[in-house]
Length: 639
Image 1 (cartoon, rainbow, N blue to C red):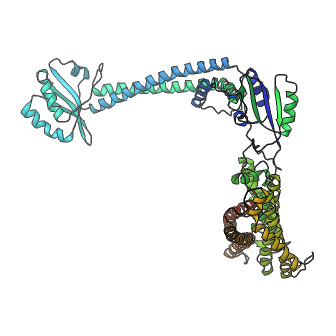
Image 2 (image 1 turned 90 degrees about the horizontal axis):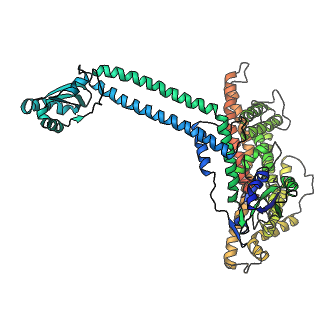
Image 3 (image 1 turned 180 degrees about the vertical axis):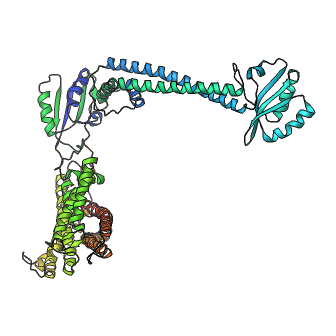
């Protein structure tokens, strides 16, 4: 059911807008519309252009909430703060976090430098000499670094022939040799040039280092462990601070977000040069009555109520259904939300979907498992799909009783109430029954289309459309004409008078002519200039093929419902195979095979049946009457 809507406009002094937002828009569900778009033809109406003063503080508090990993939906009770109090909390938290972040960055930088130094000392582990001695030589200089292995092989010849220098390798990896070279100060530049030509890369040892490389390494590793403990203490202090101030942070977040949303109402509002605001929106009739009672007592607010005018502003759609039908709203929204003046197809979909599913999946035992599983899924996950599965399982149980089927056992432990799908007479009965049900469903969808056309005041669509009155009378007459033939197949007589051939022929001819002339008749009703804008010849040729396509679609759409009976037979056939594999006709059937077979059939058949029924809903039913172009009723929410 689509809830009735009314359009309300509020007016008053701009200085009073925030109060109105707190007292009325916050308290009621109002779907706000852009007042500028609605009143664009009125002079003196202007949009609000000032920026939101709470933008920066909202950004800050959001960052704090994210860094603190606090759930905004936390149900703990908040404290009602003012904006200055919220600013103090932001300042306090930001100051503390800044201090802790600076400490953390300083410790991390120190740790990084120490790890680099430890790595250097590891490369110098072959040098058994205090570092400070190497640094204190006056007449001998040294360099520490690495060179490629190929260069290291050439180094001995260079030293022997060209200079007085010593290279002491300390470590080696896959590509480089690490070490130090010593040289007299007098030939420092010459030796450096030679080592540079050998691709020697110098690594600098920081000042203040004392002891052998191994001693330095041990000392710095101890300091790294101390820093790691300090970093852990820093993290714990931040976590403790967030936990102790969580309520304050959430309270500040809520008040800032609320004030931000209140100010943002100006995006929907307009104002005049005389400093009056105008804000408009849609409300349900029930909420509107309660709001008007309060507005009548408010001397600072003027309100007006407008009738629904789709040309100016299309009402949003809010659907409200019986609790058993409500889960099926999910399937309706997947296709498209109904327009305000459309019929809500949810009850129709719920009834037809569960009924067709039950016919195709009729089994008392498997239906019960589907019912129980869906119910548990809905209870713990709050999923609409779980509720749909549960309802379909319940209907499957009903058809299981009618078929006399329990986990594939037909006739045992219960006997069928209606028919057994695997019997010869049962097969034909169930196929023809599903075609009859399909025809009845198609007639209902045509009635819905006629109602929708009347509600939207589309006369031609109502009278001459394929799914309008002409199409309905044509299809209903065909069904009525074939009824005696179908009844004779079951050895029964029609309870209503037999159709008269001449009358049937007249009705069918008139209906086909009206459908054939639908376009020119529609142009005449709408008072357009030419009934045949592209010529009579072109119209007749195009309409002839369209009429042929329409007749063909009536046949294919009706036959499409045979799949319902087909899947009912398929279900019974698959279970017969399971029983054959389990040798259930013997005294000792395989229980494991029966269990696994039932689970396999439930999973495979349940998925396929669910998809096939949804296909019937969308293509054979919805396509006849439902457009689904509505916009969701979305009230402006303020915490």
